[in-house]
Image 1 (cartoon, one colour):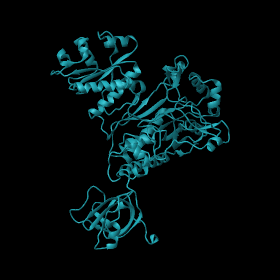
Image 2 (image 1 turned 90 degrees about the vertical axis):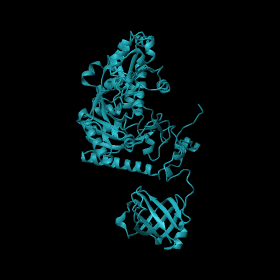
Image 3 (image 1 turned 120 degrees about the horizontal axis):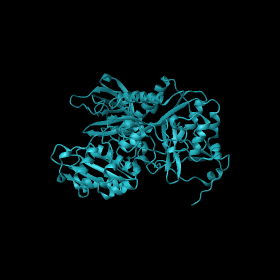
Image 4 (image 1 turned 30 degrees about the horizontal axis):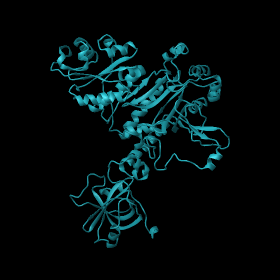
Length: 603
């Protein structure tokens, strides 16, 4: 009878030579089975790891016959004695490789169908299949280790902030729809016909209300929801550390954040190397000017250079026309890439075009001289040599801080497009040159974002981050006359080209908040309907406050060395926003729709 057995008193991965002679009860999955002409070897796996079980017909013929039926992923229970492996049979690839367990009893707890993919090896498997059978995919060591790392990460954060006197406070999941950037997920109300809740994009207003409530230091591991298109580092639902403090300035929050991240890396992944401490702080404009993005990867240089002034009268008609129409010409020097073949250069051109560029001008400096000033025309491979003087090309190369053997990559067009193309091209070259080591972490704070961005499509101002961000005091005079000039007390934490956290000092005065809403085009009626509760709260002694919201998924992805956040989430959606396991989204019954007063149309 099953009740006669203690199913498990020891974890497989905990056994070592110190347990030699001990009788243990183990339970788990058959990871691999090997029949060696009489002896049967089973690698038994549980969450803690793998241990080898030996079934010897001379010790127990009956149990040996049971083991003959075992197959991969069957769930079994084994009792046996731990022994040191015979010399020469040790397995250094597993933690328990010095010992084995000689089975004396064994039972089958549950057989398994043949899995749709191998569990006991890391083979390429279509992601759709992996997610359809996610419960099987989670058995793989890689996924197990990723989720254990995530657990340790969240626990460490909680312990760290508890020591810093923060309180963890939950906030509602069903709230009011108050658009703050992304599209809301709406939840229809059964009790109130035609009315809706919204799932929170973040607890932004709620944490501000907690500051007004006097809690001073708040955090939670918050679930957030945004109905937006997905990519490798984005999901419809994500988890963030939500953190808010009263009576603080920007410096206080950045200092706390830096200490937290340093402690996380040192504790959770000490093998990672943090390149810069203290974390560098660069302004938003510096990031755009030098790297073309507000998420720069600082593991390598390859800084961008503005060439508009040099090429406006260069004789190259394309450059002159673009500069004359208000566009820009920018580029960077790809170190040591002057020997790129025609096919390699064409691949770079196609890379740029796929990201919006009309083309990519390449200049290979592959002469046998030691200095740019000594280059001759026949030592430069570029279309520019047909239109631009040798002197001008040398001036361009000098301004780009190029060296002999470098490849100049130049893009012309509207500023936003040029920056986007060059920033991605820079990252691509950094990878090709091996400059972006995966075990290095280049943290940086990007600060002083514009408080608003101009939306050409809708002819209006949009909030740079969100509408609750405090402007720089010195810029308040330009708030109505020149909003694009106003900088915000707003900051991002970036690592290796990925935004990990975003935060700001918040507005805490009604009059200033109403000025911001007016610039964003909200009518007084819209403001009162969407944000009246917050504005009213500001009138009851709201303290100065601010915070930051680090993403848990992205940080876990970075620490685990993954390139996609789906690898650190137990049950994620696909890139097309579906869940193959539960086959959602899915239709619901007409009864459910009627209860919610909803009618689905084909429009």
